[in-house]
Image (cartoon, rainbow, N blue to C red; front, side, top):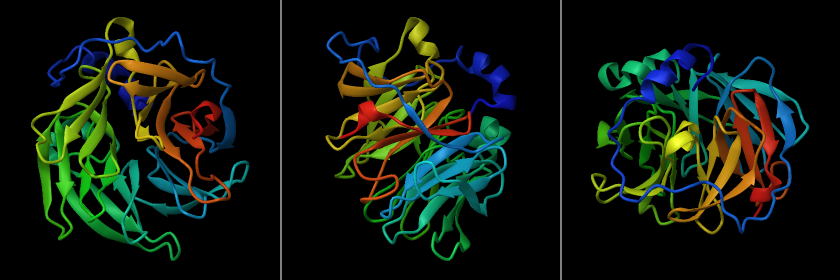
Length: 306
């Protein structure tokens, strides 16, 4: 979240330190990576700064605007976006519940700077068919990243804070499930064993956190030197379980093939905030990688297709 109010804050946060990492510094470039095809713009929402991204099993794409709190739906590449809901405060991350309803984080606004103290963020549940919005959880530090296990346990991150929250299936909220500075995007592996997070401002890179032992995070990418200004953001996993992460400032989409080994899948699109793979056999379909950003645009990343 770097639109308007955050630009001055970023320079301060980049001077802080403290995230736990285990791997040595690595570079983004990989000499054996083929040159990626250019990204293709497939949607534009004027005046917006897009933060969350999700696709349903009918290939419809959903995204959130941190400026207005609106949730938009786009039925296919090249189709118009239209608002279907509004959440209190800045619209944050999106994630699917096992029952097919969509979780929408809120509080992606200046409150994240004191989120660990005031815990003013929360999550609502959106029925994408009826458009009914109901409360789901409150008292979180933020919901910049959301990930949901198969049993309905939810994890929520704050890139400007240090707390990762947990919401259990019975609704119990633990705002401090893990202490991990600047965790941003969040995605679970297919066995719900690890929560992958990008580290945006503090000790930038990517880590995976064992669900069974959140105090023992494992770094799989560390950014040093000028690369530390890349601001990794809302990541996803490809069909092989490899993390794919947008570098917000650098404008690159990077796949982590192994700890310390990366491949650039696309570039030239700064302010990239979040990635998602498509679903279904139409619209934003399965196997295709899509990016949203603070420029209000959605791009397809052909180099990331699986």
